[in-house]
Image 1 (cartoon, rainbow over the protein chains, first blue to last red):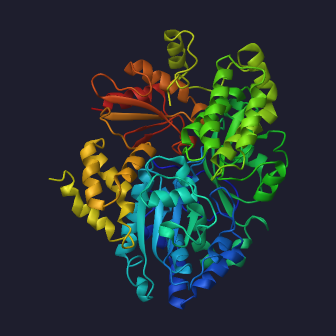
Image 2: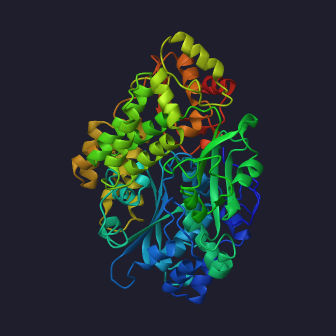
Image 3: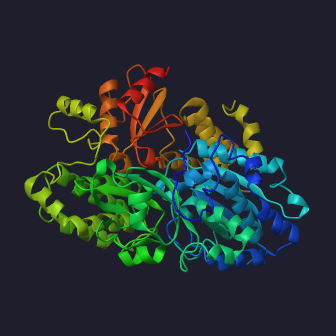
Amino acid sequence: MTLPAQVGTGRKFFMNFPVTADSHTLAAYRGRGGYQALAKVLSTGMAPTDVTKEVTASGILGHGGAAFPAGRKWGVVKLDDGEPHYVCMNADEGEPGTFKDRWLLEHVPHMCLEGLILASYALKGRHAFIYIRGEFDLPWRRMRDAIEEAYAAGLLGENIQGSGFSLDVVLYRGAGSYVCGEASAMLASLEGKKGWPRNRPPRLTVKGLYQRPTVVNNVETLANVPIIIAEGAEAFRKVGTAKSPGTQMISISGHIARPGVYEVEYGYSWERFLYEDCGGMQGGKALKCVIPGGVSTKILSAEELKGVTLDHNSALAAGSQVGSGGMIAIAEGTCMVRLARVIQRFYHHESCGQCTPCREGMGWMERVLDRIVRGQGRPEDIDRLYHISTANDGTTICSLGDSAGYAVTAILDHYREEFEYYIANGRSMHDGTLTVTDPFAESLARWHAAHPGALSPTLAAGAH
Amino acid sequence: MSRIAHLIPEFEQWKTRYPAGFEGSLTIPCLQRIQQERGYITDADIDDLVAYLGVPRTQVDEVLGFYTMFTRKPIGRHHLQVCHNVSCSLRGAEGLVAHLCLRLGIGPGETTPDGRFTLSTVECLASCGTAPMMMVNEAFHENLTPASVDALLEALP
């Protein structure tokens, strides 16, 4: 089943057509004006540097989570160094709560591909790569078909549209690893190796894939490029805010009435988004907090969200980030101790094991949280969690461990009393509740009856 | 005789889109193709792939150990992978696992004695807005309820 588009307010770059059984095809994309940006670049003989200039002038910030200016990343590559240059589309969407790239891959694969072709043109690439997570079957099939359609139509391959520009695209499937979403780990994986991140410098734009200059961009970032080139940077900047031009694809989940993928113009009211566009909370509950942009971003309480707008500066001023646009709404009555336990299980599972502070710290934090939810927490455990997080922070090659620390300590900062209560009383202040309405409540009750004293079927020892 | 000989023409076709000289990149795609055919990777498969690609055996071993989607031993005919990350937990993943445990008589990480089902719990599959969900072999099944899970399991051979 494909993901539906949610109706929201504001100007749209992606969700501006009715999704049908064939709206993802080349013919449909061309019917909407697709590949005109590429035609414009190739037919006018636009210089590669001018394409980069336009992208830089658009002010677009990377949509993978770090919000790095895309134009600046491209501008670092020295076009006449005699080396092959590679562009890689990061479609390894794995940040918990994030599923917006999946929508783009399923519904506008050609728009993503046109962005990749334009980026390769701008960076004088001859080979480009799409690294898609292994679990994405339908998005992979859609992108595979889009690539073959593009080859057949002369939009890929040798001498594209008689321009002298040639490009081959490899669609590369991951095999199950969160850390491969990190650019250097992704390139190691593309080389056919285990996905271990590596230290910079040298930057990937100097020595990346096969030790050659490489630009890695998120799916959504690349999908914006045809719009920037077709309409011009100036027109692009008229959408969104001065510091965050354009739109953001937001995937929202959790205790929200209408979960799904929305396209939101930067600068939109966060509360209006939650309460009007998304229909408020499930079961009419009050909002407790949100995870704003993937679990690696710090939570914001309902109080902290007042007056905040959906753009980078406003989110930063509120104490968090837009991140990957993966928003998770959490209702009043949710047990934040259990929630932290679920989050930390994830980070421990995904730590690649290369750097000692993360390899050891992730498991240590998980064990501390695990004993708290089992009613065996110790008074010093809260300080212990802060200590492990601080000791890990900034000491590792990639930021996986840092993010885990920020995520868990942000929950501690906000809801310390829930942890103190759990440790003092050996049970949750909120009965360990994670759901508002649980379709499987009856099955869970039967499971508990059959396993007296057991905590949970997903928190059993060795349930990893 | 190499057990992957019949796959070589396909692998050679893939090579045409890569920059020359970097065939080691095919380690992961080749292993995926072999696993797709046999369900898991054997020691003989590793020998054959090392001989074909000319990559160090340690590289192949590391890849197989690192990525969660590779398996070195047979598993059930239908691999049920339930996401138990944050968004799914907020929408009933725990109860979904309980339901499957009760129905199949196994726990996460186990296979039914008839070899029909293997149950696993996994991390985020980017299906957060359609939780709770599980992946059955390659396919996503979303917005699950007890009735839809029961109907799905009965429809599987």
